[in-house]
Image (cartoon, rainbow, N blue to C red; front, side, top):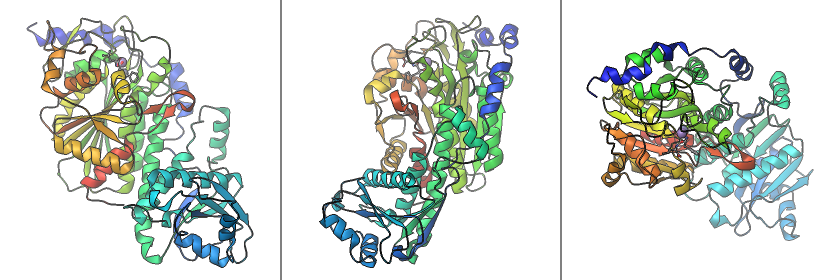
Length: 549
Ligand code: BES
Ligand code: MN
Ligand code: ZN
C-alpha cells in the first residue's frame, strides 16, 4: 500500500465514469415537482405588526389570551372593558377556565370592532413558557381558520412571560404559526391544484396582525417578525427538500436548488461534479456514489454579510439523497425513510436561506456533500481501502457507514475557507437514535467553547442538543489491520465512534458535529422532515453576529 494513486484508482476507472448517466424518468418527475424553490410561509397569508386599542381593530377574528390563575393579560382586559365585561362573564360562568390551548369564541361583542373574539387559554400566568405560548397560538389559529376568517389579529404576543422580549414573542409566534400551516402536498392531486391556483395552506385566511401593547414596541416587534418569517422560510425549504423523494431529490437536483437559492438570495454558489472532485482526491466521498447511476455533487454556498475578508463560519451537511446501505444492504422495513438521509444538507440550505433573508452581518459558507448510496457492479465493497483527500487510508468494513465517508473529505475540503468554526450536521447513526431518541440532537465537539455556544443556542431556540463524549479512549475502536482507520467501530457507542472518525479530519479548526438521526424527521403517522437543527444554527449564527430578537 505505497502508491496512493493505486488506491484511489478504485474510483477513477473509466468504467466508473461511463456508468453515470442521466435517468430520464426520474428527471421528468423532478421537473414537475420542482416548481417551488423556497417553501412558502402559509401561501397567500400576509403578516404584519400593529399597535393600538385591540377593541378598535377591524377584523374577522381577534385573538386574546386568558390565564387559569393570575390577572387578565393587559390587552384582554381592554377588550373585556370595551365589551362591558363579556370575557369576565365567560370565565365567571365557567365557560373558560384558562387551560392551555382551550378555545372559546364570542360573537358581535358591543364596542368591539372584530366580528369574533377568540379566547384562548394560556394556563397559569407564572407557568407560561415558549411551548405553552406556541400551543395556545396554534390552537387559536386553527379555530380562527375553522371559523372561515379572512382577517385575524392576535394579542398573544403582548403577553409578557419569563425572560422574553416582544421581539422574541413575535418571532417565535410567527415561526410557530407559519410552520403549523406547512403542508407537503406538491405530489398529491390536491397540492398540484393549489399550486396552479397559487392558493396556500391558510384556508382562506389572508392576513394575520400581531398586536403589540404600545407604539414603542413596534420597532422590536417588526424586527421579530422579519426574523420569524426568515426562519419560517428556511425551515419550509428544509422540510420541502427533506420530504421530496429520492427519485426527485438527487445530488444533481440539490446542486440545481443551490444555484436557484444563490440567485434568489445573493449567495455565491459553486457546484463540483465528480470529475472535479476526483481532481481534488475526494476519494472517500466518491467511493459512496460509486455504485449509483446518480453522480455525486459537492455544493458550496457562500453568504458574505460580514466584513470583507473576515473568516467565515462553515456549515457542513450530509446529503445522502438515498441510503440503501450499499453492498452492506439495509433491511427493507422503513427503508423509505432513508430519503431523509440528506436532512443535514437540507438544514444547510434552510439556514443559508434564513440568514440571507435576515441580512445577518456575518460570513457563512454552507457546504453540502451530496451522493446516493447504492449497491451495484461498481459499488465499493466491504474490505476495500480508499485513500481520503487528507491522505489517511480508510478500510471500508461496512458500506452503510457512508455518511462519515462523504463528510471526512468534505471536512478536509472545508479547510480552504479558513473557517473560525465548522459545524457539521448529519443523520449519521442509528445508535444516536437509541441513545437520545427524538428530543435531543447529539452534539460532539473538539472545542468546549463552541460546544457551549451551540448548546446555549439550542436551549434558546427550543431546538435542543445534548453533548456526548469525544474521548480518546474511543478512538482505538477504529483501528484497522490494513489501513489508517476503519470506517466502523463495532457495536458499542456507535454514535461516539462515528464522531471520533470525523474528528480525525477536523483537527485544524474548532469543530462540532450534530448527529440529527433522531431529530431530523418524524416517524409514524406524522412522518416528515422537522427542519431540525435550522433553529439552533440560526440562533448560533445570530449570536455570533451580535443580533437579538
Ligand atoms: N443514515 C444512516 C443512519 C440512520 C439510520 C439514521 C437509521 C436514522 C435512522 C447511516 O448511514 C447508517 O446507516 N449508519 C449505520 C452505521 C453502522 C453501519 C456503523 C447505522 O447506524 O446502523
Ligand atoms: Mn448508511
Ligand atoms: Zn446514511
